[in-house]
Length: 225
Image 1 (cartoon, rainbow, N blue to C red):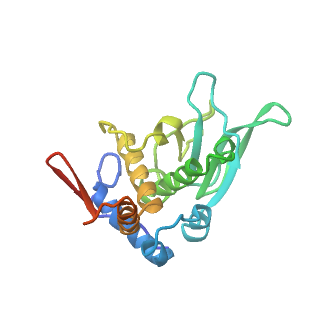
Image 2 (cartoon, rainbow, N blue to C red):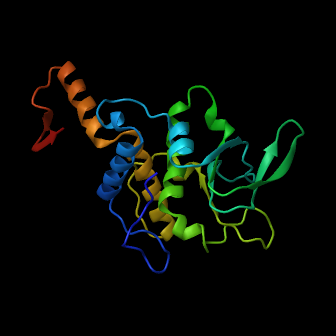
Image 3 (spheres, helix red, strand yellow):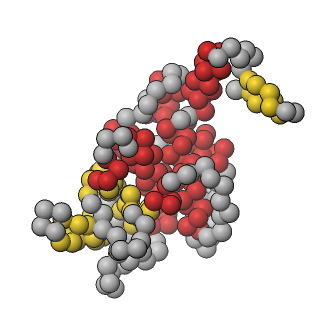
């Protein structure tokens, strides 16, 4: 695996200062190292294999607990050993606290149902983006994110429905967390749909509907692939 190294770091939050286009380039670099064919022919990445075999994560599937009235939690990323995650045990109808190990991604069982394959793929890659790009925020001295009412320090991140749903919806980025969520979404998009193969697929679609030249015009705007 190619490690994430970035020289531009926000000193206050330890966030990488990185543009969307730069994340695209880094994603292509990872795919070139992982499976170059994904940059040559349009196809769907086997995201669990990418997360486990390439990024070196452990992926678990749980019913992640959230309080009544809160938005569902779809994914959790743990950076250090010993963090405690609250889950729900449906068999015994009770909550259960589980200890996570370093580099663990937990995906909620609700998005592993039939018909939600795209959501599961994007959520897994979103969490993978956190794990790859943001260890400097959480792995050594990160923020205290508390799942339980204890004084234990937490060093993992959880992503709710609104963090992952509608990733392309324009949002004003204000907080350090906003920027990390945006970066994780960009990473997931770039891995799932890298630019080189997106262009190939888009040209094929345009050709099938009789549009030549690799683009189309809308008003005064020329859209090229």
